[in-house]
Amino acid sequence: MYFNKLERREFITLVGGAAACPLVVARAQQGDRMRRVGILIQFPENDPQGQARVAAFREELQKLGWSLGGNLQIDYRWAASNEERARTAAAELLELAPDVISANSTLPLRATQQATRTVPIVFTTVIEPIDQGFVASLSHPGGNTTGFSYLEVSIGGKWMNLLKEVAPQITRVVCMFNPQSGPYSVEISHFAQEAAQSLGVQYVAAQVIEPTQIEPAIATLAQEPNGGLIISPDAFTVTHRHQIITLAARYRLPAIYSERNFAFDGGLISYGPDYIDHFRQAASYVDRILRGASPADLPVQQPSKFYLVVNSKTAKVLGLTIPDKLLAIADEVIE
Image 1: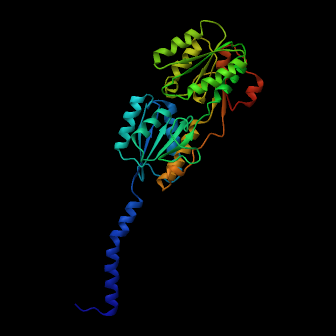
Image 2: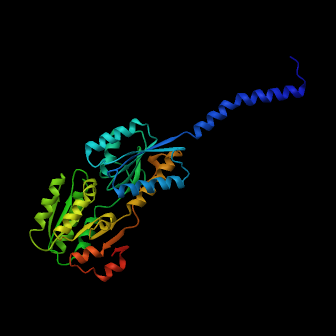
Image 3: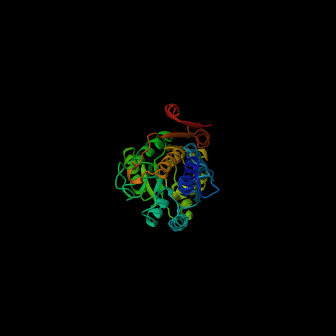
């Protein structure tokens, strides 16, 4: 076949372009491939607080350019509030070959780390991640894990002082926690005990493992007047918060919690970081990892803002008058 020079150039260009097309298409497909994120969370699926947190996570990823059902899929495993469920849920997520897993709280993080040392993990609301062995350091976590820590154990002393300020009549305090889902709570309890001693308050650490142990612990405290409660945060106490709040009201016990949702659900007072914000920040780290960052190089972030929430309605039911100076510094007052 004979081609003139012009035709020959056009033919070569056409053939060369056609040959390059598969490479271009392949590159486009690789860049646009669906990425997969797993979320392992302590809340049951029907819990409004759990839904609010994952909603914040999704919204932040969308702001960062990810399209759910387009270039991103999120797989959820709920109610990872005990070791067996957390291990099962972590294994199920890993079978889906996620690019990143976000693990909420200690038990889900522990289960995920035990299941993989290669898939990147971004944790939220974990206390003392170094002491628990999850990361090597805050500035250089190393390995496949980074995230957002929640509290320092010294917060126990702050809770004790706030509770005494809100309810100055208390002479006895029980600090309730589950050492399995929140091993750090032992140290939180020590700080609370030191503060109680300085205030002349009798102190008892109540370890609860099963839901059936919650009411006996609270009822025993209520057998004598002027009792108060400190609820240390862990997957167990968060999961059973409605039972705890209801019993505190029934036995007319002032109580302090770490999460604002306790106060919104009827608890007297809460003091701690914003969990919703933790999930937004976690989404920003997931975004960076999906774009090529290594979790080993992303520093573990600590909370910079703590929120004081006072439920004025609950205070009135308990016959308490919230000090004006406390109301003045409260971030939210529930009327």
